[in-house]
Length: 73
Image 1 (cartoon, rainbow, N blue to C red):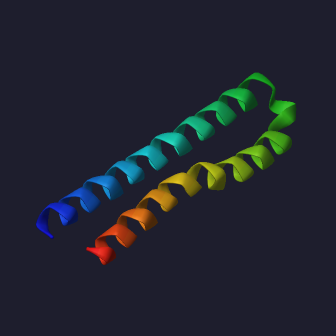
Image 2: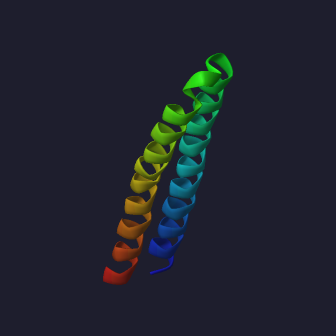
């Protein structure tokens, strides 16, 4: 049980880090696009607000699967 708990902690931590990097990339590219073409601020923000949950979905799945594995052991 001890090694499984460590593995779950590592998977959850890596999933959180991956989600943070993904969101940072989406926001950085949106800000870069707004800087280059300020008139597209509204549509770019809309795409960003759709893209962030899509990026966050995979780390959430990873954490859920890790905790499900912890519950099965």
